[in-house]
Length: 348
Image (cartoon, rainbow, N blue to C red; front, side, top):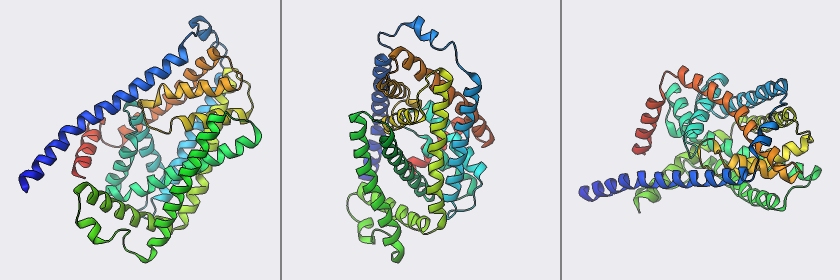
């Protein structure tokens, strides 16, 4: 039995690098295809000409609003972490920026794992106790994204494909919301979501999954019965508002004088299109959905392509800078964080 277990473990270890390679390759291929479409038949001379009259004062204000959105996210996260232990808004924001930096340089959004790892390390708590707060964050983001699309549709028409995607998102959000409520309120009289027989017998991967869900369900139950759960839901709306303002101000600075609702629609299309993790920084898909959204509102493709690169750089460079500072202040290097997280994942 021990030999079989060792063989299974060895085979699983060998499969992981290959699976990771093909996932990354698929992300890069998608990114390349998107960039080819964005810049196909776009005159380079005209592309540079569209960037010549940028209002840098508005750019600076946009960067401020973007940073404020991440501070709001840090405040929201520290509210959700209250059941785990006291975490300051500064600490939570630092971990978020450190995670975002990893998202910018590595595919598949490993930054979510990084920020959870940092908080667990700083507060000396179990890594798994942090996961429910991030799951709730993603649920809140999806709820407000769906709400934002619903409100925007009342003021401005959106492409049929976007509306269909939003409807699909709405169904997914409804299912996830019902599941979250079930975990929170049904678990009040239970110590775990799953009973012992399910976690002690059966196929090993299934047992591990049930065991993980059981622990997450218990943590989520504790989280959902606090008032901070509902405070953080309200704060989540501010995150989206500040992101919309930052994006729209870059549009104004670039000379795209569209309405705030149009800017909101383009950003929501962008968010919807980059929900699935792909290449680092969502490069390729970011430009694709940005250009697709702008051309729907009558913006010339050359102008839209130029803007997609400018807004990407303007809102990404500060993130890199602050992310590097956040990692430097963590007392660890990029190499150390990656090595520790790899060990942590292999142990699970």
